[in-house]
Length: 206
Image (cartoon, rainbow, N blue to C red; front, top):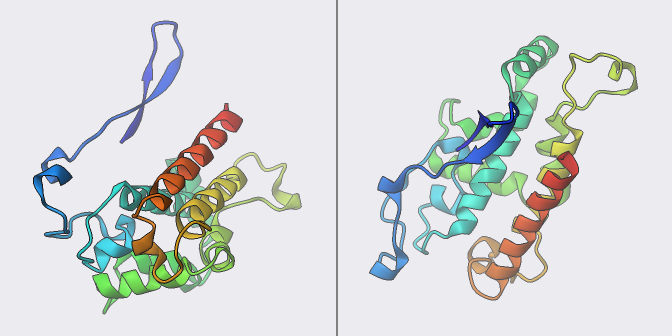
């Protein structure tokens, strides 16, 4: 989890917390598979949704972080932005928001169907941008003077960079990249690419 707290100088700082240690697994103890699926449906990795037998790795967590970013950027990262987006989308066919399929609220949605939807949306950078990040609010020229309208252009760029690190990495065997990416040396390369994208985005934000 990420929070913000006041500092002694009167400012504020962002800090992180690790939670859910009751779900933590020590791989050295020999639990190499996914004995049960836990998590919130929209944020679960594809392999977790599919109950894949291979060991869960930090790449599953990185994938979940990407999904958190996408959901937040689609529906608003704070109350004011969320309210504005609800108003803007009152006349919109919400079925066009394909990310809603990740939430599992529609009749007949299962873990398997959500995994299938995610595989489709993550099939290529073009699909990811068309189906997901195109729905991040970015004002057109007429709205730039409207200070109330959210501008998530930087989050679009970050989401695309994180996607490329996880799903379009040239070091991964294309047979089933979600499985092959967890093997070294590809795994280390992906971790480095993902963290670099996060660090560069944070530096630009500062």
